[in-house]
Picture: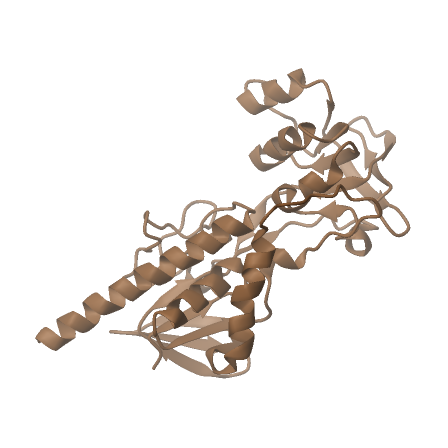
Length: 307
């Protein structure tokens, strides 16, 4: 039986696993693949040259190298079921394996909603991104588009407006006039808002060159842009635990300030609890919940010794 099993191979899960291993916990991380949101690289013809920054991707790469070396601590598989037992947890995978653990970290992330239009898949990472935090600064002085209606899209548009030449916000729904961020967007000179618009195509040969949308009145609009940021709602990957952990109305796992869930011995962090899109934040959360899981196990072991 393991001391700790981490489910998820993104920045949170990788950091949690390495932190736990360094604290001498018998640890296993189960993931279909490494990377999570960091797999969305960005390659551009004339990207802005940013020097002197310590990126989350670079830091995460060092953690991942440890797990690549310690092959007995990782399993590439998909977890299909998690069952809480009296004093431990049973984890079942798609390959038919079963693992037991005294504690769990849920770091399964969230699914970004796709546009599902021509050009999206081909141009992902070549001007099309799902993260302004990771890639926004590469578009200094360029025209870009943001697709989305709600808070994440509004914040993305305002962030990009600080260094992009012009930002087009294509909102599938109407924007409530009394929302503070909407008021700020309407006052921002280099932001143009198209409400009730539907993206039909992302254009470009090797890199994003434009976006085609259907306007609210049924017209067709083609706008030349170098970047497209898709900021549609994300769905937390919480299906494995929705029957026995407390979730909010959006399906996110509820945690306290220590990353502890409603079930003793289970911790959660990353996009499955809230969407931050910041790799460095996820790295910090992964380390925190691993430390808290270690503390939980020390207390548990101490109680057993006193019996």
